[in-house]
Image (tube, rainbow, N blue to C red; front, top):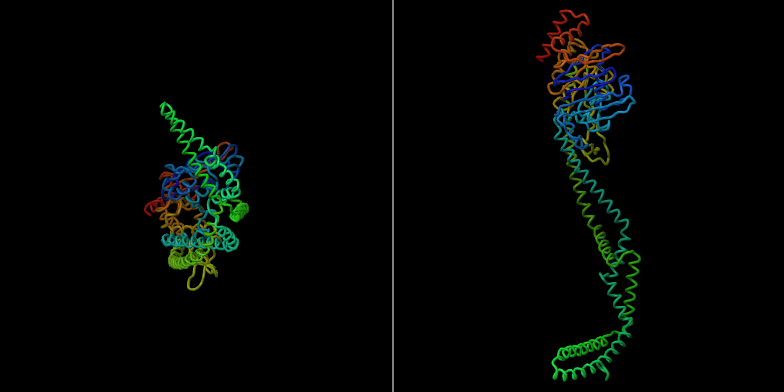
Length: 568
């Protein structure tokens, strides 16, 4: 609920703070006293367009602050969390408007944009009296209101969940088709690349092994010549290392027989002799195994050139080309698998479309049943509010489309976010006129009474914000005015209501009565707001009956009406 409104240096208001209460708040005042200024200030703090003209003459800036009870966090909390605005025990909206026309906005003392402030205001307050601030005049809200009246929110949520699932499948199908198309477009190239790499029979580390083998074959004669010469020097010639070492071993054996200090060297020399023998055997085996194979050398050179050509062509190493070959093989196999995936997801889409169509058809049927009841309630309510010859109609339209996602009785329709129906409220307030969209109803008084009838019928919806009615009494009086007052009173049991009125029958129904007054001090005009106690309230209601000269009969009638309002 709106707990308080603080206004400073706004139009004729120098400074005032107004406290509100649950239930029905009545605002009265003589013409020109400033009731519209008070509503204008409320509009500003709810995010409506502002200009420098609203700043009181001589002031630096206008300040408007509205404080709401914490229960409204249910409506606005998600938005605050998304914008990272701290939740506080009370919700505070504030707007500063400078004399230069610049505006600063705050939610819970956190700076925000005007658009964010307006979003918050639309979730909190439905202010009637200006067409652009009336939720019911926007056709896109009608389906949700009808669902609220018919208690169809669970069914609507089920439809949306089915629609989300269906759309997800459609997106998956589109993605698969795009992949299939992309594969088909480059399949020949992929196939060519794969066959080229597959035919090459690439092996990891192959480049190094080929280089090493080519090096050996190219140097075979040198290796054989050097190996043979090594064998001669080590063992086979008369002056070989083995011969010299053997002679030295014989001498050391004699020396060690005389002096034991030669024994370690004898062992070292015997080891050297064994090493020479072993090396000679290796050299002989190596030279014996040397291959003089020009055909193999040519084969290796051709293989080396192939690998170098592939690496240069693709700009990758052989190991990277092996990985590319494997990826290309996967892509080629994916095209075959895609056909199966496409068939499976298309079957899922057919099932999801059938479920979506059934959900939309059921929701539409229940909406039409609820619409019949709503039409009766609205017309009955309008009759008691002084529009006896009204016709109210909930109009349903569908958009047929050959490729529509919803099929009902053999016809395809477009799927909207909230069903297959466009829902719009139509009304005629005069006998003989055909119903027209609510937004085309011209009379401000009729609009307010239509709104009141609508709100009364839709009151079971917990989503309705605080309601502010301006011009609710235009064109009515007497018994109709009293009926309007009782309707407001009943509605205020579920929602906080504020109503600006000139009629005593409505003013008497208030739980809180605020009087807007204008005073002149020196050469300046000021607007103020005063909460009325019981005695002053009787005087104000009586004034609405008889004007400035209040008679005893007016007072008595005012007391009776106020008492009737208390017991309503």
